[in-house]
Length: 150
Image (cartoon, rainbow, N blue to C red; front, side, top):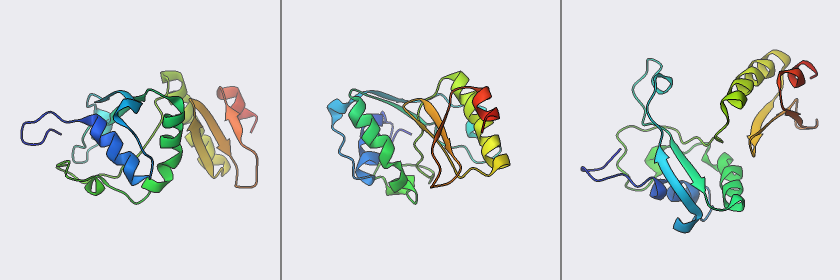
């Protein structure tokens, strides 16, 4: 949300989030960032949330370091971002941008995770992975047939 009529700097927000995770992001590490358009998905009968921010990094290693550190955001909210003037306090959540096919597959994985008692479901470099528990091996889920073989 713009503060006092000024245009919001989404690159600055991404850099601030990096600082919360102890990941140094330089301005030149970001190719482009912007808010996604609002949709009904963001509202679901609750108070309106600010639309998500999409960030494209210039280097894959920076993106991977940023994404892997996301667990450090577990108890962080937008109120932890310095002086960016948010009108509502929301949890900070990082997710990879998936293709439409992988978004649908991920939703199917969420159902299977719950039904079959898997503990872990995540994405890494656009691939969907599931693991039953901390001692089992990760399964890469490329399509619906992989879910049937779990």
